Image 1: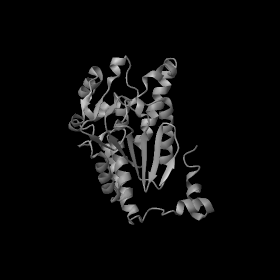
Image 2: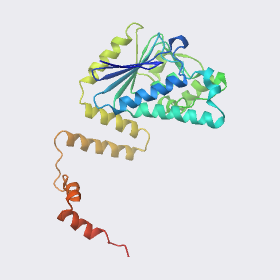
Image 3: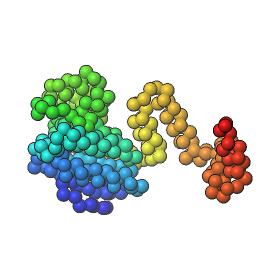
Image 4: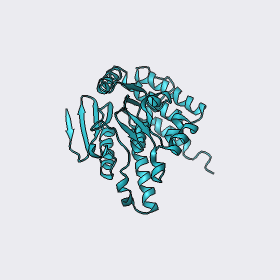
Length: 280
């Protein structure tokens, strides 16, 4: 078990799982600039780890997060400063989505604004029956900056994304499941149990296969069918290779790299044939 000290975030590693707890319960875990910086730092630690395979994000005090700390927004600066901050948060969400670990959001209470945007960037979302979600930025006179219009529209469709953003209502957890935004709703006292059950299932998998599946699904959904099928085909080949079927008769099997290092006959032949070809 490993702990790291942060001011507004709890970080713990147990076995192959990293646990992040947004820890500002007195303000419903609003994402202050400091908390966001700490979240970015924690994500970088997780990304660099070869031992960790999973990440669980939760909130302290029976709430996930109510999103960006509105009281701090005047500190973001002028229009350029606001854009820079939005891009910083976008990079944070992208970094979370791109982790080569499987990520889970354990949602209790409110997950609105930036809190909801975090849930859009993870792989699994489990929520309590009392959880509420929405994008109420419209009533503050601002617009979302890191997923509330982009990822949301991709997850639930354009028409419903407009409903969520233009009206700003707070919706029950079961609707998030019905609309393919979250995965599962559980009784209020069963959230931790359900997370542990999911982790047990995920622990049992071929972790290389899991990493590949996450990668090709994330990439494939953002491109055309034939490009996505290319990712599927390459992944299938990689699966065969890492399962022991890596030798291909007309592949170098590493000889090209070794040849470059040694400047052997294979390297010299290839370069002598290629370096001046059609250069006139």
